[in-house]
Length: 322
Length: 261
Ligand SMILES: Cc1cc2nc3c(=O)[nH]c(=O)nc-3n(C[C@H](O)[C@H](O)[C@H](O)COP(=O)(O)OP(=O)(O)OC[C@H]3O[C@@H](n4cnc5c(N)ncnc54)[C@H](O)[C@@H]3O)c2cc1C
Ligand SMILES: Nc1ncnc2c1ncn2[C@@H]1O[C@H](COP(=O)(O)O)[C@@H](O)[C@H]1O
Picture (cartoon, rainbow over the protein chains, first blue to last red):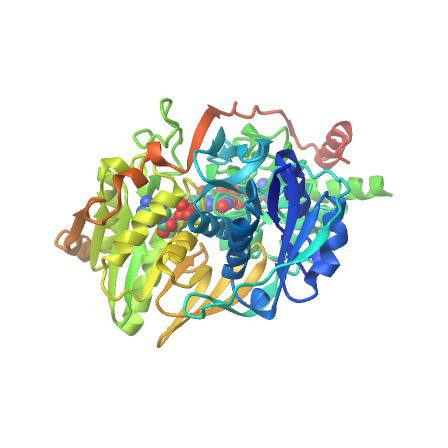
């Protein structure tokens, strides 16, 4: 069966949830090989979970440079593997960095870039991807016209399924960095999400908008989120007003989320906000304005004051959790 | 004295409905109002701020159809010095890789470029990869998704903000920078700026001028093809109730019914 390369998305010695989704998608096309680019010792920590999603091989590309330079080491390693292994396709997570890695890789190896797939089907290099464009208003199927398909897959776009793989390790070299063309990473401040799930990975998201009124009162949103085991999101108006940090913004220019349940509190539902959340399976909205456009797409809407409704829901949810 | 090229794109206004054309599944540009993408206003603003601090020159570069002139004029009226408009019917339906190739070829025609500044992600395609691919093609370092940019001599430093948090990046010039939404508040063009823009030079070039082969661009030569496209049926509104003091309880009951809690 054709080999399919998967760039492993990992942080602090753990694979991100999307890696399981990528390996699952890769299995649809052929035989998945996980590619770990990172600091020495990273791959050893990831191997077990890679095996549990069906990785037959694990290519280990570890060096200090791989960890301390930005984007290009990943492209360099993947390009070298494309050369030596002639895979049928390459899959990368469609996060901010993955989109950049896949774009550069496609340009370098003469590949066809298929971005932000929410579904992958076909076999080998005859892959067809499903994309959801204009914030979910159109569903598009696309494929490579020529060249190696380089596919970025939207986190949460498809479901991960476990399968046992051999995860046979093979060490590969990280090509030397050319300092004139490369960017050094001089520091990292990862998001401290606390115990909450990551926004794009969460199965429940509770978001607050301008209606929340202040940074302090975002506590109402957070408490409901915690009672539901949810991630917290925010509208751009809430972010711009300084109620909540920018990395939690949902919408066209923020994160695209597609959880099982999305709860919008004090959000009007502007088209740009909807673009980031309207593919959620179930949408619940609380807004005191009965005319708010969010109700046009909500499966269940309550016209009322979020400061009354949300705490009551928090209490009910906590009761049920016991 | 940085010489800065800003990549700007004209996009359908996100407030108007956007659709794909029936025939070839490309963006239906006649359908929606077209505007300079908001993120590109921020890219221009950042370039102008760097110019104001260090001197230099700001060139706006756009690959797009005839009416993209409006977007270019807006950039000039904000304060950019000159513009290059790559206009060629052969470009219709080009994909991200082809567009990046044309942009890179056009940037090569500008002398002594120090910085290329772009938006992090266009609001229509949302590819989020053009700046990275341009960096790849030019062999420049990329410092993308910036929420802060500092230029110091031949070094550029960027604070990158994404879903992964903040990353501090450093590279030497020339480099490609892309900016995120929280970088700055773009200025409004002044009346004087609008008047001055009318006299600023806009160089219109086609792909032959750039040495790009017509066989490398356009829908027929794209690396990827759309095989099918369909509008998604709009979501229907569900139930809506007034809160009579039991709104929270009612939502809980609904969620239990849906097996969501
Ligand atoms: C290029 C571009 C990109 C954009 N990108 C994004 C994006 O990524 N994400 C995004 O969210 N927006 C984005 N926007 C902005 C978008 O157009 C809206 O301005 C924004 O979504 C509004 O946020 P909001 O709903 O919180 O605020 P508002 O529209 O002000 O709505 C607040 C709502 O709260 C309700 N409310 C007030 N008090 C209460 C209360 N006590 N209880 C219940 N309800 C209450 C009000 O009735 C109102 O409906 C973008 C805009 C542009 C032009
Ligand atoms: N046709 C174009 N002309 C000029 N700049 C572009 C064009 N397409 C993309 N860009 C630049 O690349 C950025 C990111 O676009 P994208 O990768 O398509 O999401 C945009 O904000 C622009 O700065």
